[in-house]
Length: 403
Length: 121
Image 1: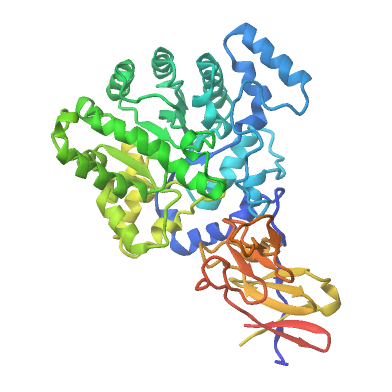
Image 2 (image 1 turned 90 degrees about the vertical axis):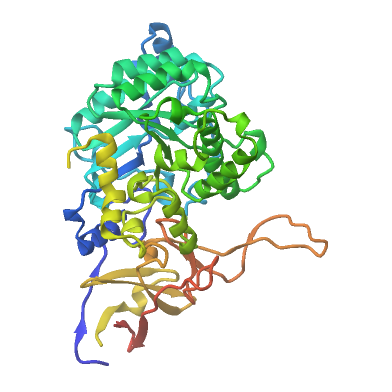
């Protein structure tokens, strides 16, 4: 045996579980950030999540309607173990953690001793530290299903309560935490009211339509909403989600397959309607952002729509150019979950969407398919300027964030 | 070459581990069926802390002669280490990824001498 024997340090966390501190979980990301000098880079995470249902008892206090608010408060008080009041969704079909293999997706029960801010502020700050990012945009999680609610008014009540709570408890506490406020898209007039009321609220840098819903984004009812957003220079995000009860997915028996298709499918449908109905022609300065569908669907849809459009231009008479031109110049994309098993395909994809100006890095933390900033930094075919743009400068530009 | 003392054999129960740091290097040492295996704590996917993940048997789906399938099961004797970041699964004994065998964990050499477990870097 070698005479010189070293005694190592045991890591404080031997096996990661739902109690592990986010900073320990993301220690390797932080290490990479130090190695790569991210402290000199502007890094913006345009899609991260918190679990709003943990705070549901607080959020329902913000419901405007006094009767519904009382019902919600009584429900939360007296039905121990019941799902959160008013929320639709997938109940127990939440297999994202692959049977406990990915604990940060299962739950986050880490210790939080800070009492000066809401727990979600602390958890968000810890994730930002792990990614070395300067801004983090937070979205809700179970509420991504709210567009499928059988009561459109419930989407209005809960969406509005959530926005108000988020601004009060989370966004007000830290200038680096932002959101794209929830729009109750199934009720267009209320969607307009949301934009009117929250456009100037602290931390609100745009608005969000949860994509899992059966509403045509090109309907005339939405034109005033789009005009309002364009006038305010507020981007509109379509945040993807899955919906296993969608008839087109009901034969898919593996969560893997349903999740892979569902998160792309809803945005494929909305994008098709968005472009073929000429929304970018009608609102050329309205910035749409397509969130959490990955990127591989975009080249497919570009080619598919271009090909069909040239054979049937009379069915999309507003278009003066190819559908892919609108998708490249009027639309922005978040990167996660970035498909990386075929780097040639990824390179072509980034070229097709003009990633240098249109792509925004996103983590989707704390979900099972989250991406670290290095997924962009490590791409060998990008220039340094392109990397800087994608990791933060593009977001700073479209959201007018301080650099 | 550097030798690092991990601990006594008896410090390790069956399926126990020690994940250590030495400078910038992190290593996970595992005891499985009495044998020791050591891997660098960097997932071949995105550099996640793979050695701090959970251990599971490899899931398989037996196919009957008529092509039908029924229940899932854990492959007898198998054991995978699962990266807690994204769920990439590797055979704890070989370091080979379940879904894409070209992906492998980086091995560290283990030596057991006089009841002590060492890793040689």
